[in-house]
Image 1 (cartoon, rainbow, N blue to C red):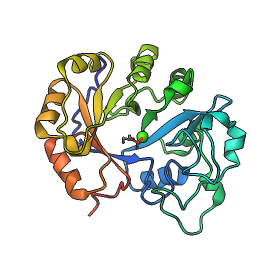
Image 2 (image 1 turned 180 degrees about the vertical axis):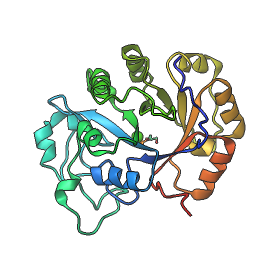
Image 3 (image 1 turned 30 degrees about the vertical axis):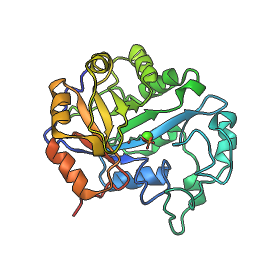
Length: 265
Ligand code: G3P
Ligand code: CA
């Protein structure tokens, strides 16, 4: 499979802002991504879906119920209709912000995010619920091409990677554009130790550069095993500084966190 050539870069441990700096700003909004950038996150993580009229937009859920004042599936809204909705700052894990410009909280399209961010940011893009969005993989790959995101920066770090729990979607992307680094997301129970069967590993190595794993399950031997196969390991979602340091000591390559300033002090 394609390799993230630089699984252990010198400054090696990436802070990946999960849905942006989502502990402080409404998740998956431009202010959340801009704050992540200001807090020096290496990557921002975001989730993409397709509108009724085929636009790539950024939201976690496949419906607007939790994070806006409305209800319904994203696929049943046109982009113009979605733009009329307001992010609900009082629901879910979203932390309310004072003041704030309502406009700034509209649901962003993926190209708006690419337009607004500085050139030195990197992206972890999640493909979700792909079964309901025919052709989403192709649209994403095309947009990444338009924005010249299928390349590495001067330090050898990929500008953008795609991760997903959906193996089929990742394989589809790999077929369309083998140069995009892909990470297979895998969820383990909290009391389980991460492990991947031989058969599964063989398959993962045909398309992925790494794995993204629920952090509680990660052990030093798992990390060593993955590195031995040339795979990077990302841990999600870590908002506990001690756990982050433990993972760093194990050689994990990056953590997804809602608090990009978690390790600042
Ligand atoms: O960080 C991994 C994560 O993005 C997968 O879970 O539900 O937050 O998209 P979720
Ligand atoms: Ca995600």
